Image (cartoon, rainbow, N blue to C red; front, side):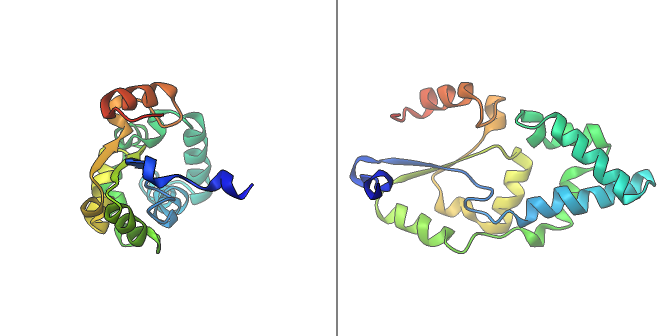
Length: 168
């Protein structure tokens, strides 16, 4: 069973990586969606926090797995709030996972092409890059919004394979 997890790195030229929860700690996103955004929504709508939390949970559940879940433009319209500005209020919570830079540096040293593929909206991706300088360790950054599909969609992977010419 141990060999199942062993990769033949000599045959791998390109590494596709996720961002949130893989390279970045999830604390920022979890805090934003579960605490900060409901607080700001309750504040602007002048409703109890519990009501705001329930409403946002209901709305996010309704679009789970779809591009809208990740789309800041969608949430700005849906909630009538400046989502990017509200994210900036807690940008200090954006953090790399402790093992991220050593891992990325090892991939670079091994001459691997490193591509980030994230469902994050381009504005969210930009904010996270601004705070972490992750782009200096990665060859290419891709937001799935460019393809109007999420990583859960086979259509995205077909389009990426065509564009990036990677082997399965």
